[in-house]
Image 1 (cartoon, one colour):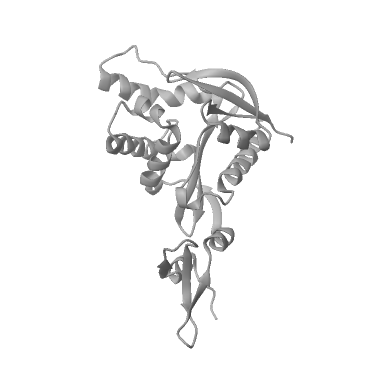
Image 2: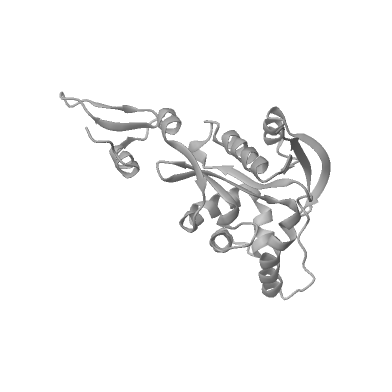
Length: 234
């Protein structure tokens, strides 16, 4: 048999049973019975990590909004869900801003965005915020608007990490964070940091399990966050 391309693989799973096991039918036996593999096996076999591209914008915007919640309203100056996500998608397609595709890594399963992580060096955060601030000040007609400082200089900062709902429970979020560690070291950073909301103890526990420690408390959009740091070994 000839080897199949990635697109061929995606098309192979042509029928879906939406039961509890989320079972994909891959084909049929000579007797007509269906057979296939489960969702966990598909993820294990087909998961890969890649740089984001502009066409990922819609899915990325959904995930960013889910992850940062009210901060998305602050950054976009919008209040309606559809408007927030449309603006986030526009930011994603653009270059040189904190939410740009240029700063995003995608967990990809059969060509589908299963999760994302957005990162950048803390020292360039002010420059990355400039396009967002410019748009926000113009929209609100207020040149005094400021954004809260989230990242410290010298840190490789994780702005946003989120996994699509139906892909959760398979360790993709942790694997994304591990990929970020590799990138940080390649760029010469030994400190990696992120913020976790005080009212999100489950996320904080996960970060602690993989080596993050609380360094301080900061306020983002009037909410208290733990600023967590992991020291990477070269």
